[in-house]
Image (cartoon, rainbow, N blue to C red; front, side, top):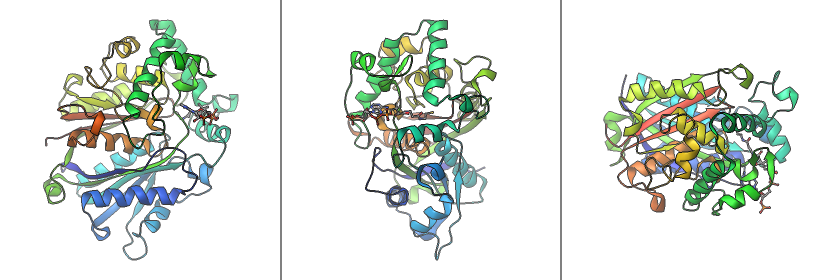
Length: 390
Ligand SMILES: CC(C)(COP(=O)(O)OP(=O)(O)OC[C@H]1O[C@@H](n2cnc3c(N)ncnc32)[C@H](O)[C@@H]1OP(=O)(O)O)[C@@H](O)C(=O)NCCC(=O)NCCS
């Protein structure tokens, strides 16, 4: 297996983009990443595109081919493009497929990207489309949507560990603060614990400010064999680990719904592969689709003892400047969650941080970062560890 590096990155703005189509935002991200890498179209071996549900969101399937076409890579160059789907972990999985392709030696310069255009339909239709990533026969058909499923996780966490609504709110306050410094973020407004607690209830105990939004956005990055990465950039960022794990799709089949066993399993593999421990990680982008999801994630990844995710958040340990900065991009909560793009955006954020290009959100001296992307309520988890040093 060959070592793999990231040599170019680009995010579009995240948010509601009424004036742009799915193909517009993808091309903006893809071309931006190629420019950042200094790579020409004819150098690209293949593309992997994370996309969850364009059939439902914009009536468009066959997204891989569409994107190759509108990126100018289909007509003469015939670059192969593969759509990758794992619900909200589609982007993370597209990255993993790209890494495996380059590591194996089958492909050299690979674009790993993600895109979703969710705001062209009503929020209730978007909710229904998203709910298809839960267990249709046991959950969706009963009317359960993701806010409801994560609300059950939150209630159980509160019951078992004494986690409070204020601690959940602290996650949102931190992530909105970080998002206020991220030019691409959907929500750049700072909020207070009180504002979260007073905001409208979506699924008790989750208020609207505990939820990630419905978003449009695209992210792309360019992968290359580490041996030639310096031909393209002075600051390649190396992939130290890629790991994926599955769990039961329905919550009621889980051993314990307050722990995402897929996260625990993928994290174990990732730490072993990178030969690091949680203490070596300088920052992490976790899948905070709801505030409770960030609390579970930092526990399951080993950054907090089980049950203490809320406490360490309230004590500021996960803020920029704290022991382990979490979601410097603003996370899904404030930066936005265009589901197919999120896993790639997380890797773009870590790359920018490790390059020292994160502006006001820069974590001083960051050397090793992690991404954690979840599909559904935890049936898929994809984790990557990235480093400045090979
Ligand atoms: C929370 C949710 C139900 C809100 O949708 P909605 O009720 O249609 O909200 P609206 O679009 O009417 O927005 C009302 C206001 O709140 C804001 N808003 C909406 N969602 C928000 C969020 N998650 N965080 C902060 N503000 C939000 C809007 O910008 C709008 O503000 P404005 O009045 O100043 O323009 C929706 O965002 C949602 O379903 N989120 C979860 C998505 C999800 O499940 N993803 C998959 C995870 S696994």
